[in-house]
Image 1 (cartoon, rainbow, N blue to C red):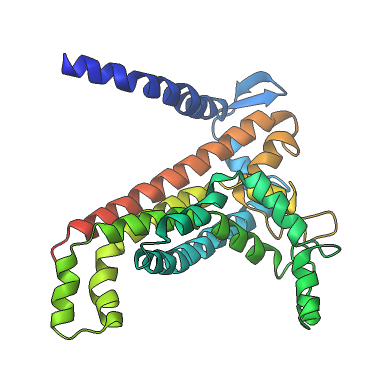
Image 2: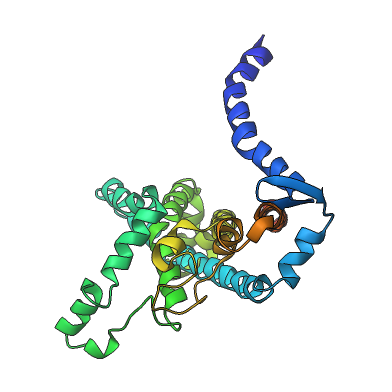
Length: 302
């Protein structure tokens, strides 16, 4: 009876997951092995759609740079989240009075869609009327003002920082929960032994937080591999604004969008499905390996 009741509780979520996740994945896998003319399926293509991603112009020149941009996107976001996010979480943990309010403030951007965040930041960073450049001029730093999203040297770093800012609330919440769950006797024992606050953090608290840091890193990687809407809002479908750096902010999500809706030609379904399958395999494979490493470190004897 209990099993049947539990099955009925899980069934709606299972159906939604199957319809909106499993079925699209299986459809993309099936479509990737066929040639397409528009929406009409042609002959069996085998692995031609996969090899075409690396041998067909312009994909052969765009895919690898977009891959490395995505890796940089992940590394930059992870660095900010695991440093600034952890620092903020530690500070908030010591401020019980304002903790809830400040956590809410940091979490609000995480709850807003990437398109909205990207559009707002594109206005803030506008070289014509944006308040960022205006503020630099007002404090005598006008020499630093620039078209942030139009300069190849700053376009990708700016997108990374905006993404890290938007998602900073999640690691703050996760690290805060992890800090609250740490046994207080460890810190007290270190204090009795004469350890300073810095020594207690780096030798006691930080090692105990490594599993949480690993979880944040894995989820950040999955999010980076699937990022699209924020980069699209900031840089457009071509990875650049009309007067900006062509391809400087290309990520794999933008490449997929262009193959599926702009540059895929008559075989757009076949090539975009092949790219979706590769993205899934890459994301899933690395995430599984990283998760096993984190779990092994978590269960390893001290």
